[in-house]
Structure formats: C-alpha cells, structure tokens
Image (cartoon, rainbow, N blue to C red; front, side, top):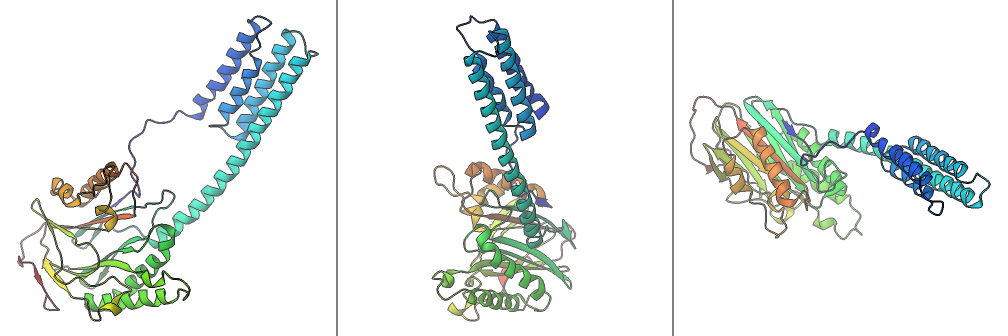
Length: 384
C-alpha cells in the first residue's frame, strides 16, 4: 500500500464557480440600485469595478470579461438615468471602468496561460518521478508492505530519499536510502542507486557483495562531477539494505550510515542497531571491506519499520525532534498501512506540515503463521 505523497488536514469544500459567480452579479445589481436611489451628489457607480476584480480571483478570462461587460453596461444605465451619456463625469467613469475591466481580463489571461504551462510541466515531472520511485506492491510473498514519501519541496513529489523492493529467488531484498541534500537536485543520484539496485540485487548472493556493487556504482557516478565542484567529495548516500528469506524467520541487514529499522513484535518496539555500521555509499574508500552483515529474528506477525532521517530529525515549533520510537509504540499492533498512515499524519502535525527534509517510511510485515524458530538477534557473516 502506498500512502499519499503528502497528506493534508481536512478542509471544507470550496464553493463551485457557479456559486461564486453570484457574488459579482449581486454586487452589480446592488450597486446599480443603490446609485439610482442615492442623491445626485453621491456617485456609487465607480464601485462596479469590484465585480470584475472579484471574478478574476476565481474565474477565467472569459468569465471576467463577461462580468466586466455587465459592469460597464450597468454604469451606462446609471449614466442614462442620471443625466445622460453626454455628461463628462459619466463618460470618464465609463472609460475608467472599461479600462480597469480590460486590465483584469488581461491579468486573468496571463495567469491562465501560466497555470496551463505549470500543469503541463508538473504532469511531466510527476510522470518522471513515478518512473523513478515506482509504487511498491501491497504484498510480496508472505510480506505485506506499506510506504509513504513526503517531499520537503512543496512542488515536488520526491526528492533525495528512495526505497525499492525486489524479489530474487526465495528472498525479498529491500533498500531504503537518503541522498545528501534534498529536492530535485538529488534525484540524479537517487536514480543511479535505484537503477543499480534493481539490477545488482539479482546478481550478488550476499548483501555485503550487493553493498559493494552499489558503492562502486555510486562512486562512478560521483566521479563524473567536474573537479571544480568543491562539493563533489561531500556527496554520499546513506542506505540500509535488507534481505528477508521466504522460508526462514530471519532478516539480514547491512547498515551504510543509515538509521536502524524498528522491529515491532507483540506490541513492543526495538531499534535493530548494528554493532559495526558501515560508511555511506560513495565513501567506502574510508574503510575498505566495511560491509558487515547483521541478522536478527523476523517471525510471522512481526513488522519492520524503515525510515529516513527526515522523519527522526523533523522538528516542531520548539525545535524538538520527532519521537518516532515513542509514537510507533502507540500503534505497534496496527497493520503496515495503518501504521504508516498514523506516523505520516502525526509527523505532519508535529511539524505543522513544514518538513525540513524529505521523509520516507516503509513498513514490512511478515504474514502471521506457525512459529518456525530462531529467536535471538545476532550478528552473522554468511552463517545465517
């Protein structure tokens, strides 16, 4: 299950344009009648400019032009009934109203063009982003999956965080990662890693070997940066690689500078930290052969919650970090979809909807079934 990119608080439905158009029409009628019944020294006709101005806020240029024409017609009626069209004051009011109405139409037309252009660009962008970060399946073998992505940039669907799931043989492999930086500038590195993972996951028998292959791919990509780019050496990707065999109650992980997952079992939440986390991808030269395998029991009915640091580093108005482990404990008995939805809604409430960094969540639950052993969490180097 894929929870929406950004959930928002419920809002009252905005009135339709058919209902809103009654406002400028009513104003034209009221202002016209008020002017006709006012003393000759009081001129309310200039207020008719409010009608096309209001219409431009919700209608298109054609509707704005129509309301503007009605307002000019109403001003002409006022002029005829209050001295005739040969009065200089009435003529100046008609000309001024016509000019202002035309200006409202022009502004509305330019806005509509920009809106259509933005819609086309956004459509192409969303298609490209969906191709990059494809929706995950609801289930894979005996695993049930739910995910959510919250982009820090309001106009973006994704940024520098990433996740993917693939099945190879009798096991599922998962990656959750976070590119240094956020927004559209990080998409290139995220695309490189996701593409490499989808291919390399089927060709490497162990997670450490897969991590080394991904690190080489990221290093090759980063090497293409111009030497003049002073930040090239600071680019990296934190990642967590997860492997879940189908017929064994165990999960194996390789930590590459990424926050540890939470294991949720029978209402309890435990952070599955690694004794020797490896450097982020793209920095393996700092510690060659650094990718150690860590294994722990993952029984039927257990849930794993994977996340990026945009979740745990989100702050509220008092600058307090989001207490993910504490909040997850409240929903520890929920299914993956409900759990992710609760966390997303609570996270947005914590930050008032203003995330400082991209945030991704991925919940994986092993279908409840008969107990098959392997209780203790432990390290492993190919033995599990």
